[in-house]
Image (cartoon, rainbow, N blue to C red):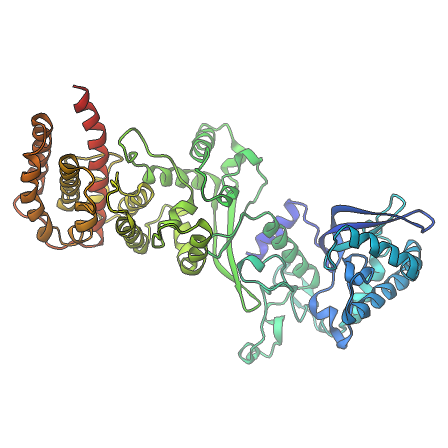
Length: 580
């Protein structure tokens, strides 16, 4: 994993110098070439090689230190500063004074910050602009941004080494990443950007050892995973670059994905930024997969054939990064497995009018927590973040590796269906079961290799399906439709009252409902009654003499799919019946 992160840094031109990292300055203090203050600009400019100190460097020896050249307004100009910030302000000026020996332009900034009148003028402008003291700021002198110069880099590295002379040991070891002899760091760099998944704002550790048990080989702290400063900076920078462009976390997990060789954006099958809006539908993902897979198989894209993908799923807790899973494979296999995923999910629309729309993974995860009426999407996503993190690696492995779905997916989808039934308003017609939950159930059945029911599962109604549980679900759908046709909206109907019991113990429930249906059939127009009677007879022939007594998880899944597909077929069939 570390090796591939290092390769990513090289292939994607990630800057990896120790003591530097990308930073963005909201404000720029502009000076003339001779050092006079002329303007304060809100620019939000990113600097790819900004000087940076780790948290342990900032507090080494009990000294209150600042960053160099780019820091918060409270530190740089003492804007709305407290006691600690005033100490850091003095340290900020001292760093500039020291660096001026290597780069004279720093001296002009020192003179400006030592001028209390100019500093007050700057802070008044900041106050009028409603700036915050935590906003980042740096300088421009003439047309030069001092932070972008390299004349001070040598001084900066020497200064960093003076802060913690014991961080590199005197003995060389084989670097875990480069394989070369090097002096390893006692502690690796912390990773920024993990706060969205439980990380600390001061940084989160990927490689760290702080327990006595880790000294069993006589090695202290991170000497157990020896890395030179350059190697540690390389994987840190690669991780932070991936984190910066990662899609929003899903189920408390951050999804970092890349290809060994860069691919054009339009060919990126790992672009999961669409997950950011969970209320939107999937747009073009299936078409992209089909297009690229066809191009690879026809030999039109040899550049993709041997390319490989890497996926790192991470979260954080207690200042440490948790690697939840690591996946890798070839581009062709990825495209093929994604195509199979879309095919396994494909199901008829709830009204029987063609194929149901594709949906995003976010929509699927919503069906893996209980339905709560009138709950906003934000609250639902919070429950997903709490309840589903342990499940996510298994879900991704199923999708990307064409592996069986975990049983818990089916049980949660069934629970979601039941909870939607219980939440349906009295007097409101339930058109059909939830299409996304049913699509997940279909995929689970198909990927359960031992399931005869899964092998016979089609996108639409299968009147010849071999499983009695499937036909029991069909029977329930017909009985519900008969009641609806006869009585209209009559409060809680057959489905709301009896679905949960019928889907687990059909023999105890459906026989009684069939007997009651005869009373409803007598109230219907003759042609419609005959149509329903033919459906009941056809289903009865498939069920045989005995309805199933109890249903397993697979049986309950077949029951739900039988209900859904029969209801969809009836919507289409009844429309045709009315047209005759």
